[in-house]
Image (cartoon, rainbow, N blue to C red):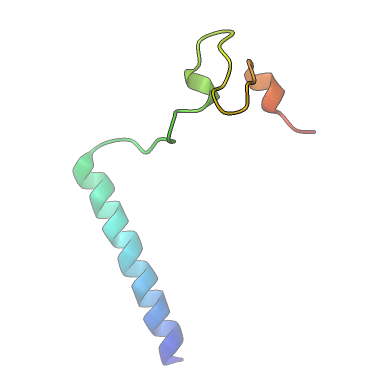
Length: 59
């Protein structure tokens, strides 16, 4: 039981630290390159080569 509480407290402290960092930086969380939404119309994705958001939809 003590192991569970120790791990839970460690994870809780980690989340609190991340939350404080996000609040202090006052910067919105974003992806590494911004994703397909930041591409100009017709510009290919630098990773997969897709040119439209519709190509990424799965059935």
